[in-house]
Image (tube, helix red, strand yellow):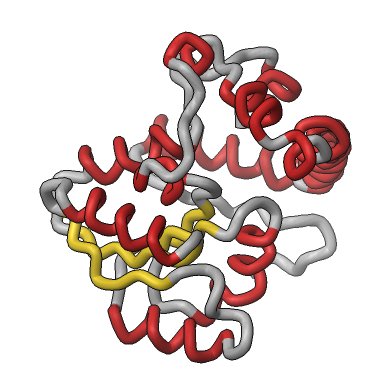
Length: 218
């Protein structure tokens, strides 16, 4: 999100919006009872993370399942999650597997909110150490993780980051072109709407009798 914001708007977020801090913060501040299902990570990590999150007021962990015993029968996982009727499903299968899983199976879940959380369960359980506080404040936690797991993460923080940046820029250009085309086609409609609003302000009524070109007046 930080990279996309910088590329598109030349602005960064005031706070560090990493999921490890953001997800627990949102759960703590939600103010209403919320049912959460945890899916992913190792069995001990997800179990300890469930206990940790369950201690948050208003949060009820309605179920959890590790990410190592689920691939033989995905339908079983989906049924287990849906049976718990969660409001939120936290998926910790690692990037990009969790995003692909959510894209493929998210529509089959009853939960209205599904969030990919990466290594959150490992951090909450204490099975994986986070970067020192000063690195987090400098928003350099990615560097700490790269140093700790270079073979697994080097591609994510080099090739994948570059690909993501290019995708954001290209998608934004496509969106702008589509918007320009749409506005060009809608110019006449916008002018007619503006005229109607001006008439409404003047007369406190909307009485628009002008028709679109090519249409028969009614």
